[in-house]
Image 1 (cartoon, rainbow, N blue to C red):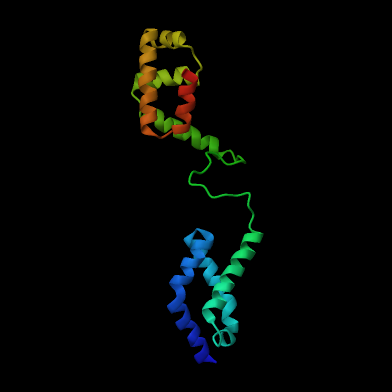
Image 2: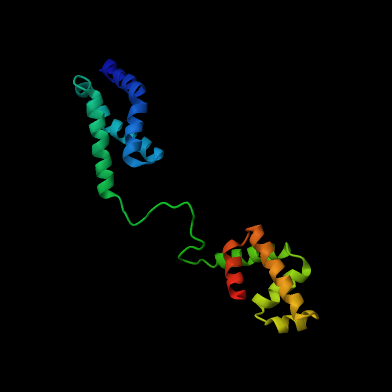
Length: 172
């Protein structure tokens, strides 16, 4: 019986790549294809002495198709993989606000003093351009130009891409 199971090892070594290619065509994902082939081979292993007498390649391919069909039937289809993860989790544990505050503070620290002051007064203190100019002791034109430069710098940094879009949308 051990010699017949040794034939299993030889079969796996010889047919691994074509079986993986077939599984990849079924799944579209190399990792799932590897899992699919491994699962099918595990199901074939206990029956290998009987399988090896006939056409083992056809039997294993059929096992791959059947395992894939059973996975496909059971798979939950509401979830799809994505390259971009959502910004925030659905359930808040309170730490996401702290993380956002830290991120904002880090990004603001990269701005020159006048630009940082303009952004803080305009968007965080919710002051108008005139109120900001009065608080900074400068003209409204200076507030506008510093605001434009600050937003451009924030966009270029990419550190708060979603937040800077909201800021720029709010500025008009």
